[in-house]
Image 1 (cartoon, rainbow, N blue to C red):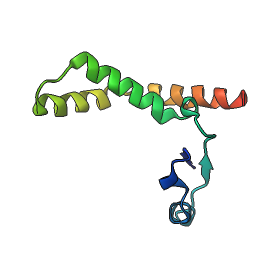
Image 2 (cartoon, rainbow, N blue to C red; image 1 turned 45 degrees about the vertical axis):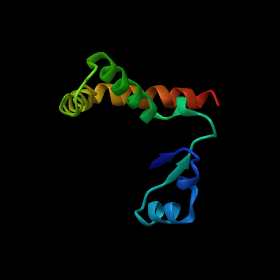
Image 3 (tube, rainbow, N blue to C red; image 1 turned 60 degrees about the vertical axis):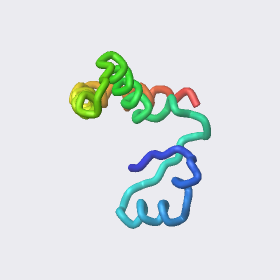
Image 4 (cartoon, rainbow, N blue to C red; image 1 turned 180 degrees about the vertical axis):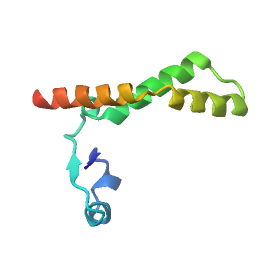
Length: 91
């Protein structure tokens, strides 16, 4: 399953065909609904970690990004999907 927003780039025939040719099911989120997308919760956590580290050099930034990505746990991911799934029930 591939879940995407309605960004113009995402809704092209080429993208749809590539996803379907790979054997995946394509689901589009309703317009203006980032609260239904687990990736938005991922980026929120990563950005919060980066803000707290406040890297000042390119090397510090690379290290901070690695640390932020490594801080995302399987439990985080599972809970984000569950949270977004629960929100879809309300729609």
